[in-house]
Amino acid sequence: EVQLVESGGGLVQAGGSLRLSCAASGFTGDDYAIGWFRQFPGKEREGISCMNSRDGSTYSPDSMKGRFIMFSNNARNTVFLQMNSLKPEDTAVYYCAVEMRPIGIGLNPHLYDYWGQGTQVTVSS
Image (cartoon, rainbow, N blue to C red; front, top):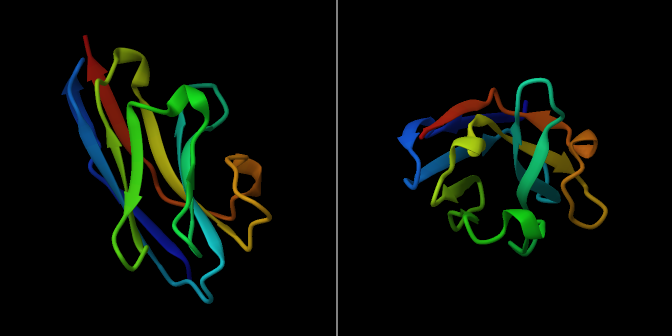
């Protein structure tokens, strides 16, 4: 059974940093993508960054580059999201998710098969 467990959320002042972690387990095979998403109330999940398990390559949309950095441990079974220069508008629930056997690499949430429980990030002004 695939399990994704996020941690590291919390309350931070604007301009501060947080590092989220996602521990992944229960995979069969090594062909998957793991991604970070966030969700604002009443909105669809928004992709932040994702990583290909086979070569560790990452993808982020331009709007997420710079302040959000995704990396992993050597085994690529724990991924991290370093968030810098946080703004109040970054307040959201943050999720990690896995897409099995992806075609290419991307952040369409509808293609992801497994989701963590989410972790709340609140940025105060």
